[in-house]
Image (cartoon, rainbow, N blue to C red; front, side):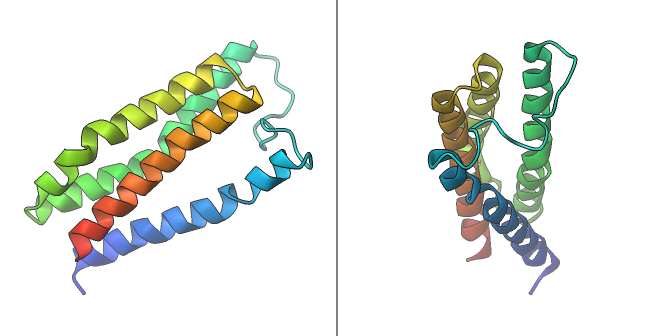
Length: 134
């Protein structure tokens, strides 16, 4: 196993851990055990609601950026940039879409739409990792 492959597998592992944390929240929200917007950062805050949502959108960007950046750099170092290049625009569009939806509303419909954009990013990054590993 090369170091590049190990880093890619590390990215896959981090995404699996992230999904293991995120997926159980969906049924909790759907069946009323939690509100859709009930995340640990949904604590009482004195900032205006829009500022709170902007902060949340920023934190969401921070959580996935290192994974995306790692995959892009590794692909370049492996001489396989076209593998990433084909999806890079879509990954970025899904990230921007997720952020914009986050800024607009925290209603259940918008939270599910935001999750859809998030899962699209995760899926595309998994796909790029797979393409680089095989």
